[in-house]
Image (cartoon, rainbow, N blue to C red):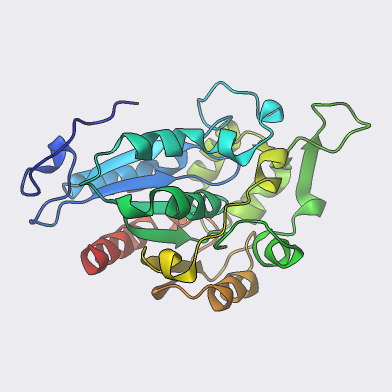
Length: 275
């Protein structure tokens, strides 16, 4: 990953690392559990074709990152690629940070650590919790119930709790991509990797004041036909930690595949509204 040089002039063009007064933005896209930067390929093309800067990241053990998911035992370790990237941005630059599914935990983590570098955080069918999984209520709100369609891996041996998990291949299209083009579901079936369970269980962020958390605008994009993060869970999280705006898409859990043009339009509208 290449990080752009620091940009000192707000009117400079996007290739120098800042969104400018002409409406060019820097989008940072964060994938969900088991996925990788690859899942955003349609959105990357659409945003770049619209003249915007886009950064996509593989979190540890995801995509082409070589780490073994069973060896990742903390959320800080899993989320390090995003934190490293944000740390290297100049203090004058703000990004539009977009997270899908479990990528919402990365957004909340980033708000705590680098809120001053985030113009707006966009949760797309995502786990939206202010402090991660700090209580039983948080797990009830933000953790999908997929036990019956999930296979578990035991990197520490069968006598210990599972270390990673993945939706069983024959259920992936039905659960994740039922409204998406079949070729995208086929691509995903070749690329999905087990997600590091132990890392997600330690996604607990230091509590900040309510005033601090309000400094970063948030938008939630609901997916109405979602079979992973059911609509009632999305609405419960929205009620628990009210965002600044809520949008809806008649999509499955993966709108970057099923409704990419609509998601692209929403992201541009959000960027213009909050930056």
